[in-house]
Amino acid sequence: MTLEDRMVLAVERVRDRLLRASAALEQASIPYAVAGGNAVAAWVATIDTSAVRNTQDVDILLRRADLDAAARALQSSGFIHRHVAGIDLFLDGPDAKPRDAVHVVMANEKVRPDYALAAPDVSESQKPAGFRVISLEALVRMKLTSFRDKDRTHLRDMLEVGLIDPTWPARLPPALASRLQQLIDTPES
Image 1 (cartoon, rainbow, N blue to C red):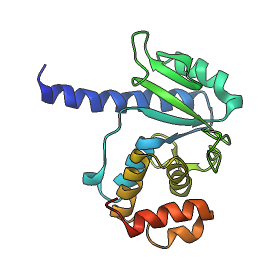
Image 2 (image 1 turned 90 degrees about the vertical axis):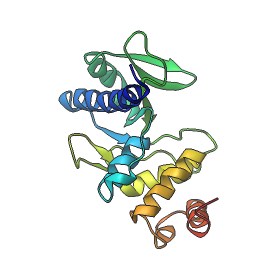
Image 3 (image 1 turned 135 degrees about the horizontal axis):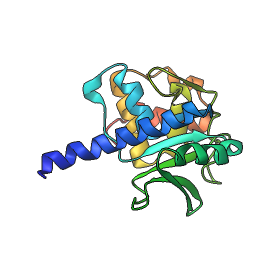
């Protein structure tokens, strides 16, 4: 297999994982929303498909009360539930690594105790295609709350295509507004 084939395969596997997981949750009528890099990609694609960035995993927002039902639904699609380092995830088969997984973000809970805000509820989502995606405003709040390097990159991508703009800090809590303003003022840092 050539390097180019491996690159294409990596992207296809993530996309397949996203579609199988969301289809299983849809079929079981379990409320969820795609979050993380795939949500950013979905939103960026609404403006400029050439600006879409690939991501290595799938993040799904679920309510804790729905975790057991989600586990049953995802198991029917070949996923294996694990709880690793305080995180629930669904490995894509018995030989999969944590990177080859659907990672769960618990709705209405803080991802980390020191985070300013809890993750949004799955109700803050929409279904622009074959799967539910976290709303743009909720996604921006999540990215500003985490504010890791990859989150800042995702926010810059959304700024670059015009999904978010200098009017957005006024919509946000002060701690998050200052983070977004920092990115608006110094996009290269």
